[in-house]
Length: 489
Image (tube, rainbow, N blue to C red; front, top):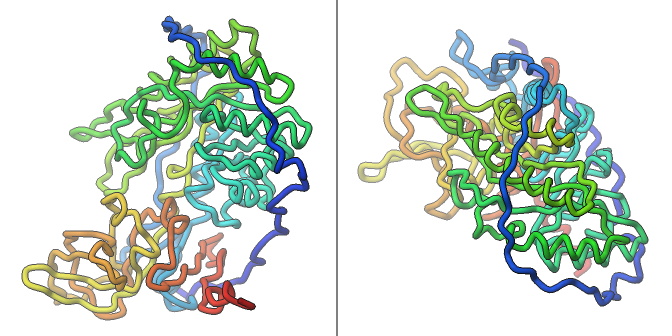
């Protein structure tokens, strides 16, 4: 196959100012909040209604696959050809079509419901990817002021954006209030800051209460967010206090919904059959609908139920049967319809993770004692998930091995000066020659967005395959980008 053609794209849209003009930012109004009430026991009630029949989900088709010639392809483009045409290694390579297919799976599942698919920008913040997702109809979920600014630069409708976080800064809340973004209330001080921001801009802020349902998603503790001991959200025992506070400040804030988020990588299989772990979404939704009933009974006009995100993917490439967007939405469909709600979901990983590989070159192979190592040019600086979480991501060679290549068990490691610098452990692979391409699969989420410059390994370029062409969607960082931070000092 001919080498893929490379094109350059414009790099960045006009910047959004970091600080809105608000002299009042330095003036913190004295806010009045009610005392905490005693805990009230809430009765659980869920009513079902007739829901439209969901369309059958389309069969999953992966964008990275081995051809009959033994080479790895991305949407018909040979990855080896891409390696020979790009400026440097390592680099990230995406499938634009796979991103589209992932979004369409959610849109198909949501037929018959009023909904917002809010893409979690923290998963991957590439501007060109954000513009594509916005063009597909997604909203945006933000956890920092700069993510809000980036979402605005990418053209997202602010009224389809949700600002989350347990430590939102006042200046960022001012921008959110000015743009009329939905804001999740996470704590007493967060509510106070939201009221302050509303007063600064003179607008009423639409808010949702983030309530911890105390449902265990059975995931890695670092990505579990809905437990009672989580740093996120409010305990349901405090709900009445927050409702009283909202009533007190009804001219500054408008309570429009409730929100929960259970965690990330929610999957479950056993003996090749699906264990309905998505039922935890229904468990949480039943609790949240109960809260909605109680809140509406106090005169609030709630429209939105935000159930967060959390669907995982098949990182192990075992062909496991995993919950789909259709499985997820079908667990809550009748509850949403029965209360005439607009459903907000916050997928990140399930939209972007399986669309990308980190493409590396083998620097060499070595053995120490009983341990074999494949040393590559990529590292924990470009992709930290294995080092940080002990996460598994599938590893493949880009080209067919030599006929006499010995198959052995290797740790795949990078050049960073840390024993924790590994991309995979105990992987059975043919012994690769120096310069062989090696990919880490499913690298679209929480990889480039968590990359660092540790050991001064500068962040890599990114490309995607778009209709058979390879297009650069982010420049690789250069040494002059780093030294520019010290200009004039």
